[in-house]
Image (cartoon, rainbow, N blue to C red; front, side, top):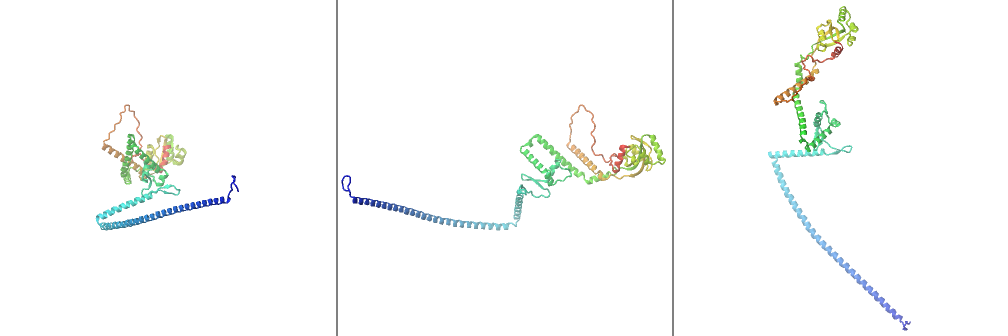
Length: 437
């Protein structure tokens, strides 16, 4: 084969050259691969050696630290055991001394005080545990109050317990309870007396916190309320010593003669308009006419005429003076002389007469107690005024106009002749007096 320039082209020679070049390239590639593999291996070996050295160093350091830590633990344990042994020895010595000291007088005193202190602390802890809020059946929080059978506890304000007696005293002072009414815990809550008392205490404390007690107006009101409470308490103490069942009974016995109402009579009457008619009826009665029939026929007293003129039993103080004089001057079965009153002319016949007993103690007990109270209050005030030299400065009145005296609302004295207590028969006689004599 020839080249373009006419030379002979040797293909065999050219093939051997290409093969040689390819072999050289493969040899270079193989050499590079080997060199890279050696380099990687060298890196792996270096890294393995480094890891090994670090591991060995770490192990040696850990072993050294572990040895030091173990020696430290053993040393601390040895010191702790020694300290505990020393403390135990001291405690044992102190306990022996305490055992020897307790039987002495000082030891017994300190033991008693310490026991009392422990008891108080125990009671305090029990009280705290009892006052811890708990959940009731509805899931609401409820507090348990300490048990006080004599005076139940109904509330607590800032750690201070409120007893039933405080609620009752406040309610009585406010007029919410009758004198004979007994307050129970249930009724106190039903009537909202506990809530009212707590609200009043809270408001009063808020007023104190604001300094309202320093106001002159408030101070005067507080002093006035204080004086009223003290005055009532003083009079209660005085009356409690004076108005006793024995004193009431003693006064009743000393006035037994006064409490007797005297005799009482039973009578019947006929009321007519004129004296001539009265004389005519007297003549008819003396002639044997029936008193009851004449009363029903001719008496103007419509209250007693249907009863045959029957008035019933009455005492002297229960009728008008003229009627009573005529009735008590006649003997049973006798006709009194005709007499005139503002209602007309009366023909009176007394049918019976009997002495009365003293007024029963049950009927005059209340008036006697009121009398003793009034007398005690007046005497106490009189003595206090004399001791304190009280002087009243009344304003001068230029134009004095006479005024009527105030009505006497006091209880009548037991020795007053007009002081009478009507009995069952008096009601019938009173109706006769209102319509007739």
